[in-house]
Image 1 (cartoon, rainbow over the protein chains, first blue to last red):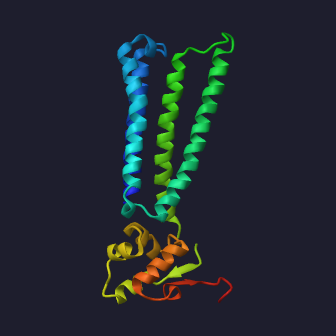
Image 2 (cartoon, chains in turn red, yellow; image 1 turned 45 degrees about the vertical axis):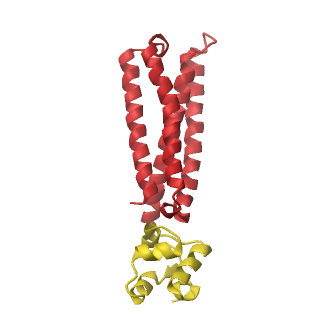
Length: 145
Length: 72
């Protein structure tokens, strides 16, 4: 397994665990306003918002800094996965926009708690899509014969 | 399927059974890329193709060849 492939797999698994954890917390707390009411939950959210991009940057930088571990084939896969990442981010924002518009159309305003949720979900989906794009890229390249 | 084929595995054997790791180090790529090249699952850039040829000390056309589909 290529070093980049390994890191993508780790990122994907971490992202998946984080997503499941957030969904569990959200379901356990009952509704979206719980994020605003509970200061501990808010702290966890802020830690996720700052921690995920930091961990992601460190992982990517660690890989990119070692030229012996990354060559033109890996860079091609990263480039392709970035397109998948971009599409996933746009799709997530489209889904949020349509859903919130339809749900809160009558009230004319959206609860502020959604801001954090939109950002967190976009961040997680972006990381997952990038990792998945890399894994699919390797799989496709190994399949092409 | 790519029309560009290579003789990397044969050349490694001819060069005192050079390991994939050694070749990767000399050509400036990862061992996984050498594996993909040997299995014809990846077509290298011109730069890497020259790097592989240089690692064996042979001209480029001794390592890579273009198979014309019109033939046979």
